[in-house]
Image (cartoon, rainbow, N blue to C red):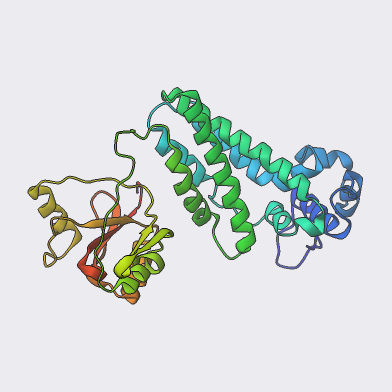
Length: 329
């Protein structure tokens, strides 16, 4: 980092100058060996200026995320309705305009800065803050304490895991939003507002004569992790793939006709059973599956209910819909 002024570049604020100086010193001599006086001396500002922006050395690293956590806490403070949507939205808002900052630098250089333990302790504090905000949100919506606390812990972990993965992947090259979306999809499975019935899991069984081809299509092409595999006498083989949350959609013939008119050009009518996968990017997923051997029956298009859908024919003759939830305009 360099705090010198350069032609054509706006003058850094005192806060940015202090953060740059702190990170330089952490890299040069380690976190514990660096004092606040060292930081202000390197930055060329007074000690009092430091405390105008930060409360401690570690606050230099966490200030950007802390500001967003405060916004999340405020957003969820009065939520009573649709807590799943509100929590997911507040977490995604964390990523808005989040650019590489001292925290991302510290995560990648924790060993060189000699602050691994400090980062772990501070991360636990932030996980707990997010967890308490989410827990309170769910309790106001009627969830019992244990279920709400588990969900809160999951969401707190999701945010910090997403931030760390983003930093290690190269924060300047990728968007935090994508990492938070992936982590949020996992945390959302702990929602205490999801109705619980007698059916614990829905499993779709596909008979595949070209077993390896079909397995590769869904496991590698569609990105469905293999969780189990078994073999039996006579060459019998089966593999079980994780497919995220399962729902069963029941539609009458009029609804099926309506969906076909929206999702296709009228030349690929729905079969009695059609499998739908929610994905993060419909067009990218369709292209990947096309390369893996699928036949595109209808290109991706935006539906009136704000999803982007595509229809394919997978190996084994299975009709597939890929859908990406776009959210409000």
